[in-house]
Length: 112
Image (cartoon, rainbow, N blue to C red; front, top):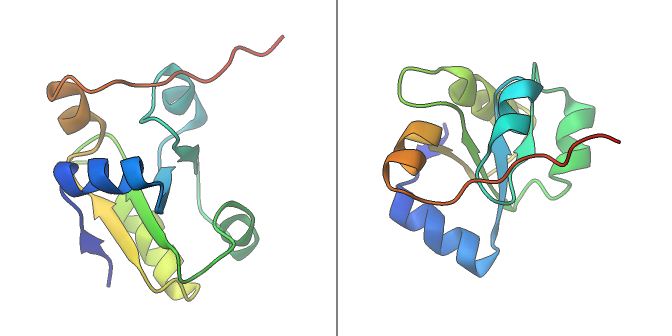
């Protein structure tokens, strides 16, 4: 079962570059703004997608979505666990908590 990660622990892990960070929201939400370095999982995660975006199933993967009322991160984290990932965490506060803390966001590059 995935465990919860706090904003403070997430910031430390991001600084140390020791995680794969996944946003479990539609592509348009990701493009508008996402946590720095996050990859997008816009829909149901497949085994093939998981292997492509997080090839080491023993590396820490953190999943987030819009905030505590959003269930997408839980669904994606559960899929990763089913696929054999051994260290899956959920940032429950998601974008709402990150934004409220005044932390920087990234935008997806515009397609040309």
